[in-house]
Image (cartoon, rainbow, N blue to C red):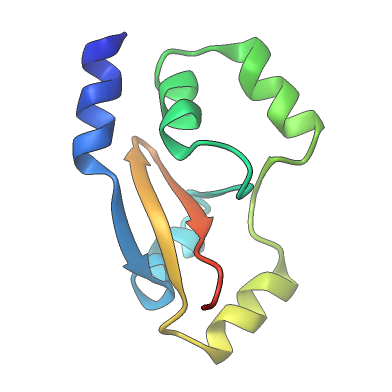
Amino acid sequence: MSDLRAELTKILDEAEWEWLIPHVQRDAVILVAPNLNLIDVGVAIASDNIPSVQQWIDELLITKPTTVQVGEWNLDRSKRFNTLIVQPYVLAQEIAAA
């Protein structure tokens, strides 16, 4: 498990909204609430930790982007996100505006 965590930590990155659009179009983006650790979520998804993932889904802490969110982000294509690829998904966490 620590190897998985280390590997995911290495590929944690930052991306502009513009770069995420193709992944949203193929329904592969999962939004992660700001109060969750992106690496923890990635580890849970990659290791099929169904109880944790289901709890986050139930609590709306991990969701698909809504059409309203996509519309807002399309107005600011330089909006930035912390991102983590856990095939076939791209986990994204909004970076708060400064």
